Length: 177
Image (cartoon, one colour):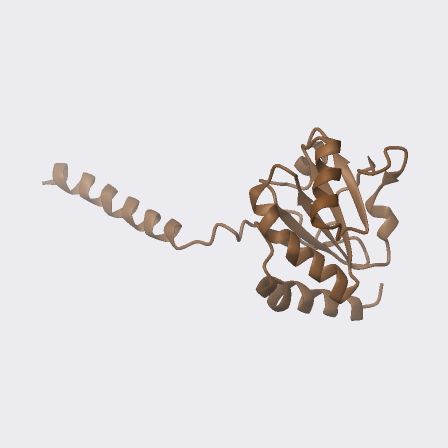
């Protein structure tokens, strides 16, 4: 009898784990960076390779880091939202052009608009790895003290902006540095 119950029990356990997994939101990938200091980097600017971009430049400000690439189909979907976000809220959005060709990234922004206050060029993707990037696009909210407060995986929608990102940004702007 035990001979038949063991496989049945194993099957039930697998079904339970599968049903739990199927009900998870793949866009809600936890980040070990939440609540920790944003990883430091110094990368060349996408448009001006002689200019360096670093998170230290934004100390005392609330800002977003948006990881994107010209080859990213989902980035095309989110880009109009980022353009609108930068115009309506005057929020510093820093781009991290990830594993791309410089000329392709520049052309992409020329064609679609540039919502970024600065755009770091991460040609080999090493900085993206430090930030725990699984794929593009990904967006992080960083507070005035340089602490990562939120990670959004996948394209940002206007609903995400209104319901998650801007309420958090507003509360962080009210906090003392």
